[in-house]
Length: 242
Image 1: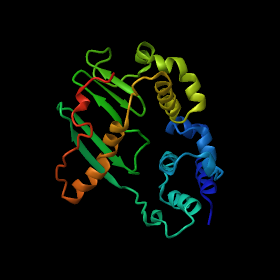
Image 2: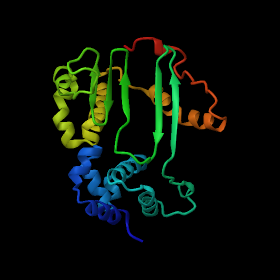
Image 3: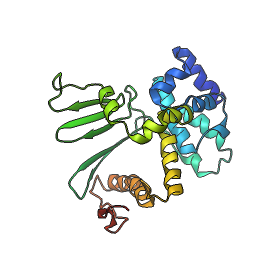
Image 4: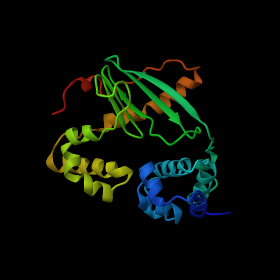
């Protein structure tokens, strides 16, 4: 059986694209892509991230990630009794969850494994007078020149770039994955710990971010029934962090 690295490289070369092409589009760091193509598992992060890298790599090349994920499991989980061997990688898994917040805002959360479509991060933030989408990044603001159409974000970035990114953005691009965002998140956490600052996110945020998965699974099992979202902070979220 072919190794994962050999298979991925074959797919890429058949399409005539470079690792830089994939890195720019998917924002997976080139060093991680190189590690995938050389089966260098020690150079890669936790499996949950690696699976995401594999999916992004394959989707960029218009290839199903199923075979690649099977090869990754074959290489990294030698014990066939391991529960990971009961996982099934099914192309086309799709679920949409609607979350309504206490303040009446709506969050649409989609799990889309590999439906046939161009690569996108599927992100959107929308208010009453504007919207932002990514990927690719684009913005619309009511009353803007050019009418009701998406516009590039370059002018907005120049005016509203966060000071943290302005200070370390170039270093983050060189050292971190996903265009530098991984580096910035780790840098900011260490900065808060060293300077005694309240962290931007804490264990309660982590619990809230994790909850939609089991709640969605429970909802689907009950015919898409509404599920109550737990308040892990017991109301403390309403207080401003020091």
